[in-house]
Amino acid sequence: MRKTFYIRGLDGLRFLGSFLVLFHHTERGKTLFGYPAGLSFTKGIGDASMTLFFTLSGFLITYILLNEKKKTGTISLPNFYKKRISRIWPLYYLLVFSSIFFFEKSDLFALPGPQEPTDYRIAIPLYLFQMPNFHVFFSAAMLAALGHLWTIGVEEQFYAISPLIIKRTKNFVKAFVIIISIKIFITIAFAFSFRFLALTIDQLKDLKTLSRFLYNLRFEAFAVGGIAAFVFLEKKEKILDFINRPIIKYTNLVILLLAMPFGHWSDTLHVVYAVCFSIIIINLATKTTPVFFLDNKYIRYLGQISYGIYMYQAPVIYLVSNSLRPYYSSEHLILWNITYSVACFALSIGIAIVSYELVERKIIALARK
Image 1 (tube, rainbow, N blue to C red):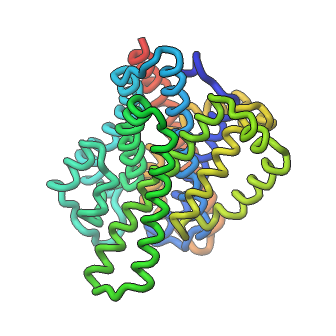
Image 2 (spheres, rainbow, N blue to C red):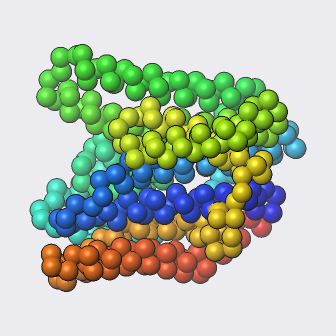
Image 3 (cartoon, helix red, strand yellow):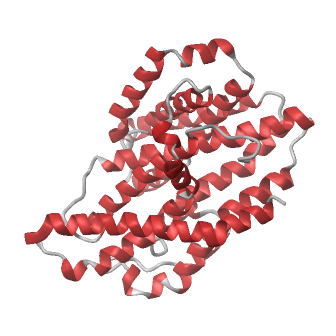
């Protein structure tokens, strides 16, 4: 992909997203393990950063598929899925099997206190068939240190349908607009139900479970990114000129920075985030935004390994949280927090580098021959 399509700054944008998610998860880890509560505003930032990943994925995948269709008249689905599998599955299944056979049996990766036992009859099939996000329907107990894999399920499910939509429909933009509209309509319907319907305790519980699942199923973010790719590839000059005006670029950035801490408040906000992130992506793609910070060789490399940083961070946080428990002291809280954060970041990045150089890079190269 990098030989045929590369936009300066997108690797850096990907790393920035993984950094913010890691920041949120390290703070959330403190709460999970009973340490003094982490910074609460990181919850919204972490959720918004996941929308960045989904929007960016929607943009890149749609651009590649549209470009192929434009040049060849069709899309090779086997080739598309082979590349996606080579990139996503190795680390995904490494973590799933590590959890089943090691994390679940080790106190180093366990949450403190009594936990609801995992029902393996439900959990294992869902994780094996790329549906970890469906687990919230059936059980509150996730496999150890694998709660973050819900995002991989959402991504894989969108990858399963988007190439078919782009290949077989004459107007995929219309289909993507329908996806966005349906998600907004469902969000409004849920808000109305919670506020105005007389629900029993069980009905309320079921509705909240469904609402949480749909909140995480952010197909609308992929769709917004896909529409942005269409605008960029087809060179819709009026739209591009408007998006690239300085006043629009900087107003968009201010709106995004002010809104991100509230990412956990509303589903609808994530449509706004997706639009804001798409504007930034187009600004970078059309080279109207300085990108040194996002495009120097160090940040670019960290962007390339960002998938590993994301995948390994949860087990690392569990491990660090348990390992540092004997050394926790309220008298040395600042030193302990610094040690905890540095260990989480350093180990997540270090393991991601080893994984990328020794495993991922080779598998990716093999799949692209």
